[in-house]
Image (cartoon, rainbow, N blue to C red; front, side, top):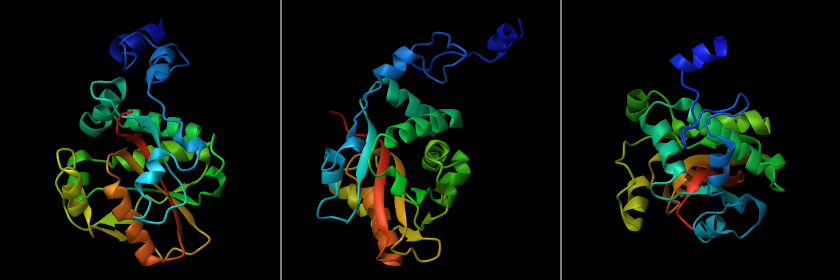
Length: 228
């Protein structure tokens, strides 16, 4: 009866199909979880996400957990944590990314997760950094640290959503700075972001880390990348 009353006031429904979740399910039912377009990129080198960065910035590994498709379940989930204050969704998806990374051959080498930062003004408006929440969820699974303030955004920029490839690069060039002690060659940092299209934002973050400590090892992980 208590569980029924809790469900009445706090609906325990799947974010994908709206059906009631079982006691062991979180955010999505099993059927909707299986419908998410998983990339599997973390399992092999020279995957499409890694190739985006070839010749642009030296990285160890690159991956994205899911393909981003318009009007899909994943888009709805991303809108939930970016625009509807659903921090729980970001943490849930971060945990899924963590489980995916544990299928790779390189995750144990990661020293810390470094989320792509928001500008202070945007952080105040939203109340949290969604990339940092993704990193927190990942860290729960991977048992590693999160350097939430490792990078800072020094310039406020417009959203990347409707910009061309060239404009995306121009929009983020030289807007990030390393905000901790100088990285050393023993550290392997995993940069974390929500949606990656051209890779311009993650590339700019990687350059900011390398400018602070040239010996640092860097990998990147996005929740989602462009469609199939």
